[in-house]
Image (cartoon, rainbow, N blue to C red):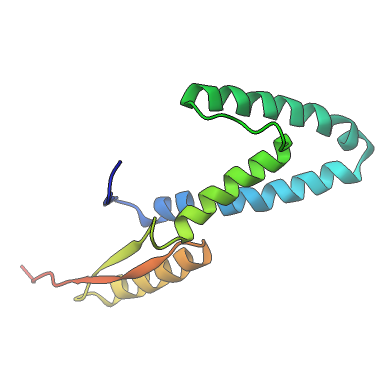
Length: 137
């Protein structure tokens, strides 16, 4: 159990993809489900796909020591899992992003503003900007 984990990575775009992945997957899965429900072959395949998914979720849960709820169908369990993951990045008590900017560069400031907007659109909580004063050599 950690109070704070600080991640300082080389690529902000990779972190943004990670942060936005749960919300993006929710969107794609909802479209996929609608597509399956509209076609005859999809309606035939969907129960099998959900049963396989449910089995995989049960096995994964057993490996990490989580008891699963049989009350939720596989689709509901996947949606709940993704909603929980997406909620983690938007809860300021669990996740806070800070952007570090070189104040000597207008390009860096512009990139930080773009990243702030992208992180907000991805559902991440951005707590602020840290301005690094980098001296000229």
